[in-house]
Image 1: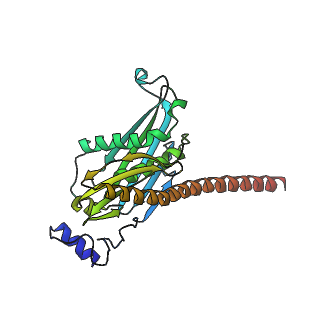
Image 2: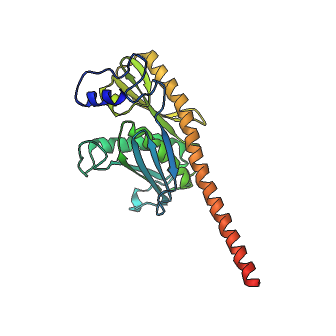
Image 3: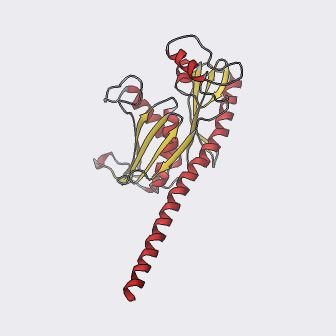
Length: 268
């Protein structure tokens, strides 16, 4: 039934996005996140990296820095510059896109940069730069929020000093109801979206955009829903980092055991 509704929407048939049982086109409840997982340390040549699977979104993030900025005259004497580059792969959307960056990608690069800047201690690296490269491999709605979530983890993986991790999710208005974590169909066919980025450890909101028509009550409801979801996302982010460093500790311990064993064999 869920797949029939999705196919009908793609064909342009007028189908409700929330059925009589309160379920959405992908079978979720209105306040339910899509399946989300994050893995860190996926790129050896980057200082920090992460890949996020959020619903059908697949997004890869690489962090380089802090490092010297070139050309040097662009550097700031009191802090580093954070540069973010958000790009959609040509095969990431239904209709193949041009490899050249579109205006939308440039806009989202700036949005992501501004959502991450407040938590980074940029003043510790004067005249330097931290570069964040985001590649969307598969897009299914909410890519800016998933990118912020993954980029925050990649920055932590790179050892960049931060006040806390940034977690992000988009709420929206669908069939007159406020729903959590919009997918692509809901984003396109719904009545509006409200992406939010939060630092759960401090409660600070670093991003809040709104597209569409919402009442004050609906905005408050959406932000409250996003805050609750960001706490869930925050736990997934922390676990991704913990897993990575447990693997590193296990690997180092295994090397030490092998080294001791080889010395013992040589002595015998």
